[in-house]
Length: 423
Picture (cartoon, rainbow, N blue to C red):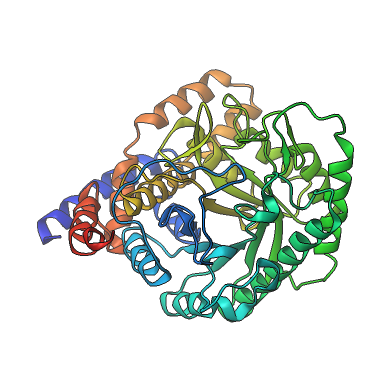
């Protein structure tokens, strides 16, 4: 960027800073707080959740990726190079969320036998790049999940296999935390459920309860690993009944003092997770937000700056407990350039958080306490035309990342030099 362009951006920021100051908002403080928020990018966007355990066959267990855009990562080294570019396009310092099938081994290792050593290359990379790591058991796309049940399976041997897998994953999460100096969030999601109306709804949930208690029996220092459980309203193949429902996991998370995960694509299409945050944070140890964009169903579209995303960000910021809220991306899109999908989704999430940080909270609260709802509504509407983009541009400039659509030029160049050579 030339000196003239930087001067124009600074001039625009100075005007924006004055405009926000008139509403009692400190833009410099907002940017400092934004810098402290670390989004966890999802590794599976880069390779369509194929993983590296050398398994045959496609995805099962309610997981689907649509599209066949050229350049999918075929191994861990390619995936890490793709991630390196994605991170260079984002202002701030961010994390990576790994699934268990992203281990690196010379020969196949069963999922209940995975160990920290199988992820040492990821830790070395994360240390070099200053990323934290989060983790997920992979309880799908496996012969022992072929009938749609894992931790709530009626067969004790199959159930035990998945319990052992999740125990191993928690230990790997603790290894990440110990090596990187920041706790890993290890999130359990299972596909368990019935396509059609079940005769017995309680037995699978009782079995899931027993499985989870066995998994969590080993106490792990929360400075190393944080446990989370993820509910779902319905899924492919579990349209009529999901064992791990919102009610089940909410009660479990509260009673076991662990994190609850809210995936914005896991609820009814007209239901927003934003309104849940203020209630849940009164009871829970913490939340993991999986930011996605469902379109009509749990289709996991690339995150864009929608009203729903802004509402989620606003409630997360207003919770007064941001240190207990962990934010990660979770979507699949192979219809567009996969690195662009990472960058667009993460930048949209960061913009939503910045918009929330620029809210004149004290003034809005004052109007509300005084019962002056007319002024509250007027201010909420005025905020929509405030010069937010000038603050965002200044932040990107300070962090040395491209402005506007300039980042697409880097992605297109990488596509020609790197992605085009991949089959």
